[in-house]
Image 1 (spheres, rainbow, N blue to C red):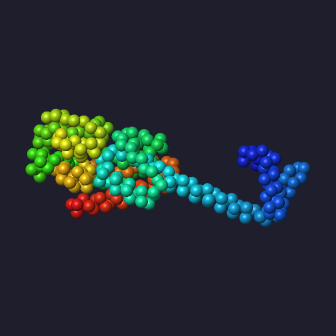
Image 2 (cartoon, rainbow, N blue to C red):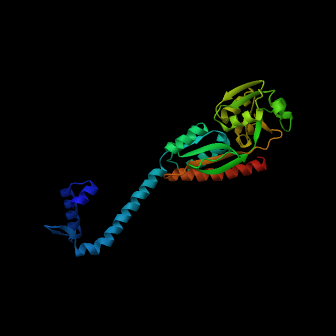
Image 3 (cartoon, rainbow, N blue to C red):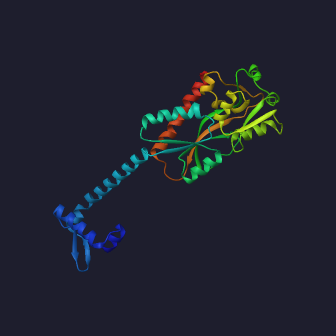
Length: 289
């Protein structure tokens, strides 16, 4: 009884009184008490399988309650914003229908920041980009959502819009909006230009701001095509895109979560929804809609 009380963080008298209350309620002596100590009685031994069943049921109830708590908690999602409007917004809208009590916090950040937050547990999921030749980090479960090509995002009235594809030499003649260091598209453009300098350049965080700057006529930018297909600015005719000449680079958008540790059910549900929405987005792109 003393060791049991220590295990349960109770005083021994409190534990003894609890057992006696249970015996009075059941009408049987669960324990045989002697000066040498207490041991289970014959009646207690017969009841033991039922006691174990009750304890298992209590554990299942607690796990179910814990899952319910996880369902209604906040899900934190980090994103590099490369496909925020075409993919993320429809996914969150659908997620809210099935999880009306779950808040979703969307945090825009660079890839390294997202990875650090995933490992620390301050993010549940991350949307990041890779070039096809990049190595994937082993600490994360990675699922490919979209695969596209870098394209020139421009206004329909841009001189480059008259071309079926844009050579790098022509790209250098335009004010160029580039992603800041730390984004995959910054690394790609740096490699694409090979040290050459555009006529003028801006630097910004994330594809969404880049597209807005293009829409306002500040220049052109280079983004994955899946960042533009289905975007409201593209659907309204405010921005469009043209392929880069002589370039066959693949850009991947993936969703990642930490391999170690448990994943809340709400986060798992949102992960699965992103996979479904990405398939629908790919189908829409193939249909040209």
